[in-house]
Length: 154
Image (tube, one colour):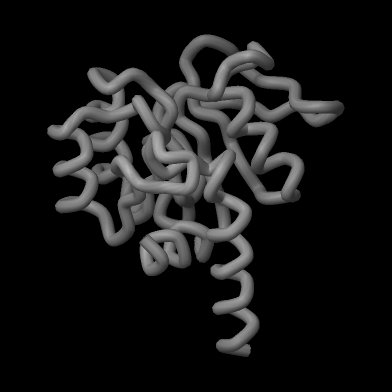
């Protein structure tokens, strides 16, 4: 997990597949997590042209392949498992190399595909909350370790 997390947070850009404008949904909470840490993020959702977080309006893209710099983007996924596999295939085709699948966003097929096809794939049944690796729970520690690693390399 540590290598995958450092790789994930070593990207220049981030995207959230399954982003939502509804504050009670995890797609919104993930987007707000990136926003509150001042990380460059773009929501991926076909349902609306933009999402407002605090006073910042984030333009959306409908598909992962529409991201401006997919090769420099890590992708958080918070979609239903039957959609996640499609998102993972789009991400692979677009050139994304690091993905983080939130708890309940994947099934065994999606998890196996991600671990096989991406340089770094985070997902599974571990994590501090016990329900799986979750950015909202495990993200700060992983981000901190990635930042420390960057500093050591300078």
